Image (cartoon, rainbow, N blue to C red; front, side, top):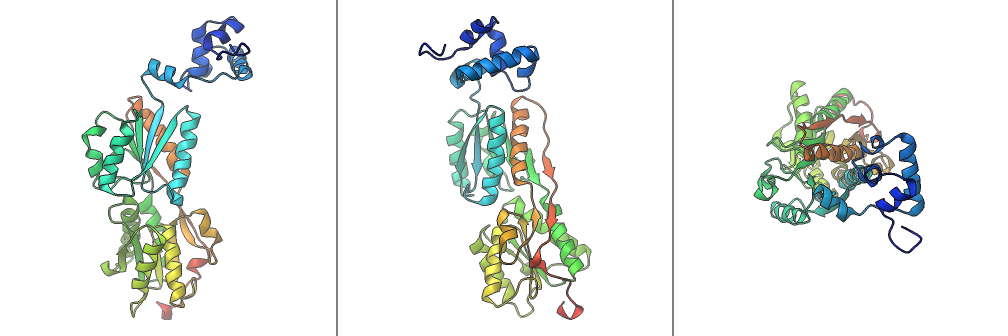
Length: 346
C-alpha cells in the first residue's frame, strides 16, 4: 500500500475496504461496460474513491498477461501533419483513451511499399488491432499475409474489396456541391479531383459529375484534373483549368487544401472569388471560414469518424459481426461561391 513506500495494490485496497480482491479488480480493471455492474453503486463509489485517494494505477503488463491483450491499437495515416488526418486522429485517441486503450500512430506517405513495411512494424508491437486511414481503392496493401488474424478497420477511406470502414458519405458530398452550383446557374464547371487511388477523391468527384450528367450537362473528362491533396497540387491543377479560353465559371476542389491552392491560382490570374469564379472545397476545416474570402465547403464529421472507428474495431476484436458506417455530410455555403450568375456569364 501507499504510505509505506510500496505500490498501491488491488489486494491492499480490498483489505482496507473489507472486500474480496476480485471485486476490486472488476471495478478498477474490468471492461468499461462491466465495471459498474461488478458491485453495488455504493461499493463501486467506495472502491474508486479510495483508489483515487491512494493514487492507484493499473498495471498494464499484468492486465495484458491476464487478458492476452496489449490494449494497444496501431493507427496508420498518410501524413499526420495534414489537418484532416490530425482531426480524425484526435477522435481516435479520445475514444481509445476513454476505453482504456493506447494508440501507436505512424505515417506511410500514401506509398504502397511504405504501407506494407509500416504494417509489419506496427504488428510487431503486438497491437490488438489496427485502424487504417491510408487505404487505396484496390486494397492491395491490406492483402498482406501479416494482417491475417489481426482485426482492422478503415477510416476516412474505403476500398473496393469491402473491408469494414467508417467514412463520410463522400459521394453525397459531391452531389451537394453540384446541386449548389446548378442552383447558382453554373454550366461550365470543373473538378480538382485529388489522387485517383483514394476513395475520398473518386467518390466526391463521381457524386459531382453524376449530378451534372443527370442535369444534361456532362462534365468533360479534360475538366477533371487529378492532383496531390495539397495546396501545391490544387494550385497547379487550377492554373491548367483556368488557362483554357472557355474557362470554367465554377471549380469544385475535393479537399480544402486543394481549394486554398486554387485560391492562389485565381489570385495570380486576377480572378475574384465569388464574382469571376465560384469555388467550393471539402471537409470544412477550421481555416475555411477564416480565409480572406470564406470558403464554401462540405462539412465532414472528421473527429466522429475517428471515434466510431475505435468502436467498430473493438467490436471486431470481440468477434462481433460489423458493417461499414457512412456519416452524413453537410454543405456550408460561404462567400467563395458568390451569388447566382446571369445567363450571359454561363
